[in-house]
Amino acid sequence: MSATMIWIFFACLALSVPVAHAMLGGVAAALWLDGKPMAVIAQRLYSPTQSFPMLAIPFFILAGNLMMSGRFGVYLVNIARLAVGHMKGGLGQVSIIGSVMFGGVSGSAVADASALGNALIPVQQQEGYPGGFAAAINSASSTVSVLIPPSIPLILYGLVSNTSIVDLFVAGILPGVLLALGMFIAVWWVARRRDLPRSPLAGGFAAFKGQIIAAIPALLMPLFVIGTLRFGVATPTEVSVMAVAYALIVSGGIYRDMTIPSLWTALVDTAMMTGAVMFIIMASSTIQWVLTAERVPQELALWVAETIREPWMIILALNVVMLVVGAFLDLPAAVLLLGPLFVTIGQAIGLDPVQLGLMMVVNLSIGLYTPPVGTTLFISAAIARVGLFEVVRALVPFYLVALAVLMAISYIPALTIY
Image 1 (spheres, rainbow, N blue to C red):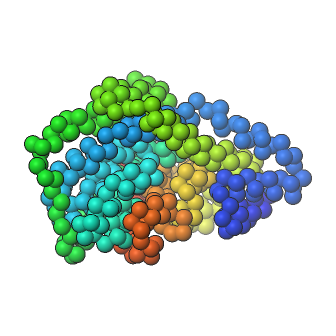
Image 2 (tube, helix red, strand yellow):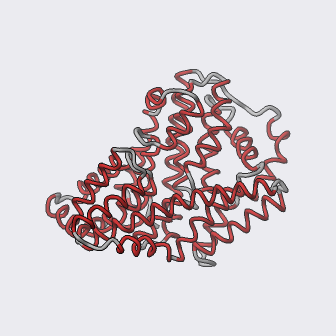
């Protein structure tokens, strides 16, 4: 039954059927061909929604939307320009620094690519950046957001693998910084070759110190999240609610830029993003049920252990599979599908689940700017109004950086285990 389900799932994807619908179609067809009752689908769809930790997802999304609905985005860009605008290709570096700061607020690469892309790509093009390179910087650097806490993909991995979300959040900081540093170097190297301009902010610190001071409360949000979780003050779900309250206080009480329309927009955007994520979670649970019932994870782990003897080769094989899958599936769907399978394989070779989680998120985030389904790639290319081939060609240095960081995380446990 599982083989039939997988074939139908990929056939639906080839026909451009949305991922969640393709999952349900595969399960429904497999159950029907096997003569099993369809009522199982309804039961499995409902089951994952009854998880208390799952509430952290909509609340963290809402906190990010509330924070970015006002002037904070402008403050963030100005701070980044003050810090790195004087360098060659300074506006490109601003995209990376902005993603690091933005990631601590939103935890979403798609939100990062949209917000920072609309703010920076047109300005970069006006200053002489090739459109493909400007889009490449934005599409690649926005994936840093999925590693800097609070990270929605890390929450999803923690839920499907029974791994501590707190440990995942803490472990994601160093890989996120390494990825940002690598991209920083890549932009600097290309900027020197192409003689891209410096972009210091007129007036310097004296003119914008007020904005820097004003941005501090919002920039403290990731420290608030990590500190509260690390010292056991609250659970991830409770911290997500506290983050919403924090965002309301900062936007409404400190910045005083929250309006009824902006609040309504934040709520609607949160509902739409949560609905999309939850639908994928619900659909993936039906596939996980079929795979578990037929002992596919255990059989796959046993086959891998018997076929590939060396643990380092198994890790390499896992990475190759994730790179391929990430190019065709969106990150949340890929995490939910591969997580339970790969955790079982990881246990067989003694791979720490936290390390595996960071491997998975870094690996699958590369798919966000890889054709044919790269979400941040399409967003950035649309903003820059350039062809995909031009962007992909400019992305080569960023692919090399991401793969180097991925290999380091995969084979150096100290980078992810504390």
